[in-house]
Image 1 (cartoon, rainbow, N blue to C red):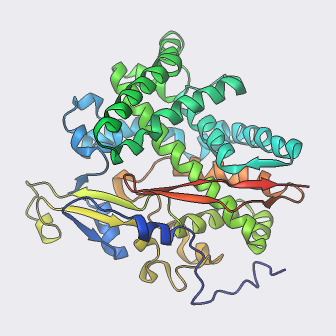
Image 2 (image 1 turned 90 degrees about the vertical axis):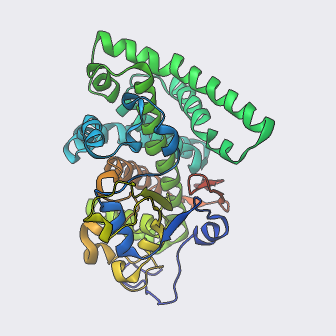
Image 3 (image 1 turned 60 degrees about the vertical axis):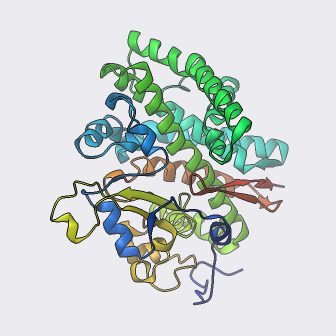
Length: 398
């Protein structure tokens, strides 16, 4: 068996799992200037002169300012709202508050594998993500495992309505009605009871903070759904992808299990660099672009930046950009994950939580005697959100 130190990096080696799927399914917004070069992608994402233009940004412009989800805000409005959640992702807070819950949840989920001798990683990754992000928000705190599963299903029903963007006619009308129903059920059974409880007795969670800041019910639901989408869906696919890579590659599994915390984190960063969950982000240059910014951008232009191409740009990441390189973290330092969580003011603040959730679940999974991948995972492309979904990640053990 090859060890991590012996694992060769061939210039022609390509460890990417989602590239072909991306190439077959990528669709950019109309009239977008698509940017592939890594440095230009970084400059666009970091520019304070451009505004968010992703997903439902146009619809957000028709909302009341206080009800616009955080992801669609820019400038001071974005900073003011973002400060309400960033403290929950600080390293010390994650260590003290979330690590015990991560370990407990990982033990509970992998105990099912040890008992039943098989487990679907794409299913338990969802449970892991809902448990942690739900606790952060407040909607799963204190719930039994059975009640947690019910909440997870209600959230899934709401989030997977993204597929309706591909629908037309009666299918679209039906999907909109179903989405409205699912949102109402989630609000009444999970969010509203938490809001009422926090008004009576605040806790250390996001809903308590929003209640303290006198957010309206609509604004609370908007930010809760933003955190569910950004923190649960993406982590679900990240965990599945990490398990797939490491169970297929003995040297990678060995390297992960023998590494310290920073070494484990470097391996996860390299996997995510190679197969980022979100592939395309959008920014727009406003019509009133200031004179200085006009040297870099064209007023009114929509820019579609390819995270994948930036992550694989040898000018940024070094040689063998399509291969897993266990030394890349040493070379790139904090830049190792590249643009996988975005960059600039809109960089995902929850990335430390996603990495740690994945780290603790993988560490527990890979230590199970005889654990192995027992099926070929399946992937589908979701062009509306420029991402993929992985299913059928079945593992078995001795």
